[in-house]
Image (tube, rainbow, N blue to C red; front, side, top):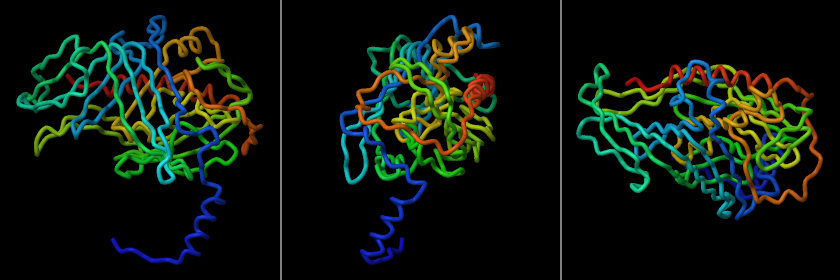
Length: 366
C-alpha cells in the first residue's frame, strides 16, 4: 500500500476537523478503566405460552452463532444469561474491553465430516452429555452433528473501542462498527452512518428520538425522558454456513432482513444503553469483535411484564442489570428531534414478529 506523507499542520487541521465533525461519537465522561456494564436475559417460564407455535425447547434467553478458528457453532441458552463488559485500560487512544457472556443450561451444536475434530471451548466439568449424531441431511450423509449439553458456558474475548469516535475494533485492528454500549444523544450520527457490519449484512443509523416516559431495569429506573435509536438493515442477506470440504457448505442460518432493524433505548443524560436490543436481535459490533457473528437475547421476565401484564415500564431483549459507572456529573440532555412516544411500542411489537421469523426459518435442518 502506498504511503502518503503530509505535514504536521495538515494532520493537526484534520484532527481538529474530526473533533468538530457532527458525526463524531466520542466516549462519554464515565467511560474509564475498571468500569463495568452488565446486562441480563432471564428465563421465566410463564413467558413460554406467549410465544405462539414454539416448543419450550425452542425458546431461549440467548442464541448465538459463534466462530472458533473458522468452525461455526450454534449456541442456545435455556436458562439465565448474563453479559458483562469490563473496561480494562486505555492504550494509544483506545479503550481495551473484555466481553464476558455467562449462560446456563446450554446446548452447543455444529456439523462436520465423520473425521472432524471440533475445537472445544467449554469446561469438561460442565458437560452433561456430548455425542455425535449421524446426519440425515441430503448431500451431507457423510457428516455428523456434534451435540453438547452443558450446565453452563462462559465465553470471553477482548476488543478495543476508539475513544474519539466510539468505533469497535478487533484486537487485530479489524473494524466492526460503532459500540452499542453508549451513544451521544445530543450529537447523533447522521442517517445512514454504519452501526455494525460483517459479511453480507450491514446495519445503519436511522433516527434518534425522544420518548417522554420512564422505564425500569434491574439496575433501576431511567427517564423520563429516554431516547430510542432506530436502525435499518441496508444490506440484510445473512448466511452463516459451515465449510464441510472444498465443495460443500452447510447453512446453519440463512435469513433475509431488510428495512427496520434493532431499536436501542438509551438514557440521554449519560448515553448508556438501558435496553440495547428491544426487538431481540443483537448483531452488534461489540459481539462480532469477540467472535459472535450473530446474537439474539430475550429477558423473558421483562418480556412477560410487557406483553402479559401490559406493563410498559419494562421492555424486551437485553436489560441493564448492573454497572459501577459514576454518573454523578450528569447534565440535562438536549434532543435533536421531536418526541415520538409510540416508537418504542412499535419496535417492541415488531420484535415479536421478527423473532418468530427467525425461530421458524433459522432452525438448523436436522
